[in-house]
Image 1 (cartoon, rainbow, N blue to C red):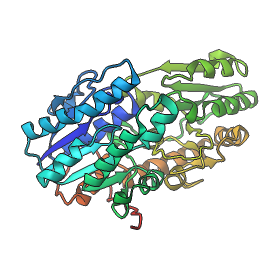
Image 2 (spheres, one colour; image 1 turned 180 degrees about the vertical axis):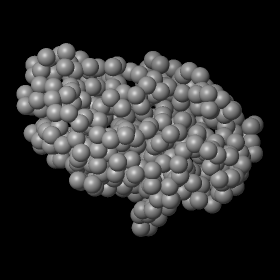
Image 3 (cartoon, helix red, strand yellow; image 1 turned 60 degrees about the vertical axis):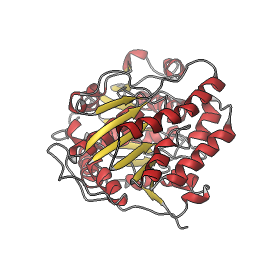
Amino acid sequence: MRIAYVCADAGVPVFGWKGSSIHVQEVIRALARQGECVELFATLIQGDAPSDLECVVIHPLPSIPKDGRAARERAALAANRDLRAALRREGPFDLVYERYSLWSYAGMEYARDAGVPSVLEVNAPLIEEQAEFRGLQDRVSAERVAERAIGAAGVLVAVSEAIAAYLGRYPRARGRLHVIPNGVNPDRFRESAGPRRSIQGRTFTVGFVGSLKRWHGLSDLVEAFGMLHQWHPSARLLIVGDGPERENTVAELSGRVPLEVAHFTGSVHPDEVPALLASMDVGVAPYPTLPHFYFSPLKVYEYMAAGLPVAASRIGQLEELIEDGFNGLLCAPSNPKALAATLNRLYGAPELCARLGRAARATVLQDHTWSAVVRRILSLACVEPAAEPRGGEDVGPLMETAKLPS
């Protein structure tokens, strides 16, 4: 089966290190493991394909100018002509799978007009994101693009209930939405053999992985860690990733603890993440109170696959993924004292850490592998996989899908 995977988002380097990049790679990898032939149509490639994705045929789309917001928007909109022409030229395809981007509709309309099954995967409310955080010149056109792409798609997949609710405001989406959360490739992460920290007084490492942006709750993490370090000077903080909040985070941290007890890795290659997770005693997802929490956080799935106990905010999809006290611990968002108390609880209970970590890994192995995600999506598109998955990743049962009423 020939599958055209489309990522026309100029902000997603498909072979880069960002979370969105890893998401693209893992979906393509899972499709290839099903025995499918995947061809990638992408605006931003950035780097070489991982060795196991070298078989993927790449069709670069026109680059988007970096200067001038209005010019960028016009160029991205005009690129629909190039995408449609490329799909016609390289086709026919048995499935068109597109990661929704702000200005792209040609993939879904090509599939509809060709009578080909299609999937539109929606990971974020991009119009709202762009308007709030980066600036949006032509919102009217962006809304029209969304309506066209959503209306033409055969299957609409939202990664969280919040995204599904957002999409529900488009009349043509109602009754066709399926919620399928993100997943993880467990082959990248190995469960530790027993408690990471069995001797009181040894270093206890609190870990965070992700882009350093204000909606990730880094200020709350710094305040909570400051309290934990006062109680237990052996506590250490490991922050993996980089971003615009790094300078502020370092400054806040320096006012609470000696900076030598914290380590910032900066941006790291995805291949380095598993070893860094293995050096942590707890993985933290300290999201603050947000009016629209739509994330399906890859970091949390990775913590769990690595057998780490997770301390996360009780918010959004995290409440569905984590059963408090069974496969992780939940605490109130925007409450550093509650987070500090949760970390303190884990500090004094290595056996609890080990039990939570084992249950966390079992949860993602059973329900949240990328193979399971992709098989469910192919089933929704009424496309049968070419074969059983080839080696590698464990495959759990298909996930239940929530569908909004029409």
